[in-house]
Amino acid sequence: MHSEEQAKQVEDALMGRIYTALRDGGLDAEPVLELASLLEEWGESTPATR
Image (cartoon, rainbow, N blue to C red; front, side):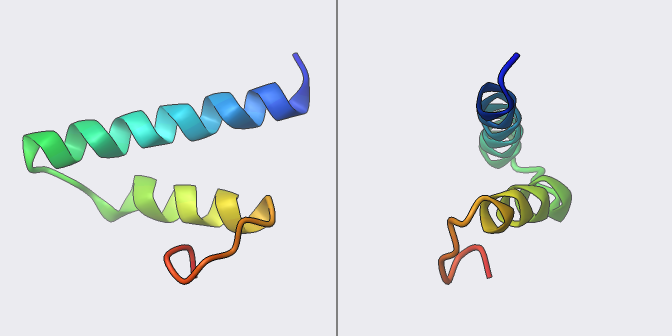
């Protein structure tokens, strides 16, 4: 599998975990921080990721 496809799968999985946790009212910081770190690594730096 291409690394870009793998990165998209990781991003989708993290966003799914975050969405489910928000919906259920039990959001932990771990998946949010992991997603922000990945986005920063991929050059998608924003105030939200910093």
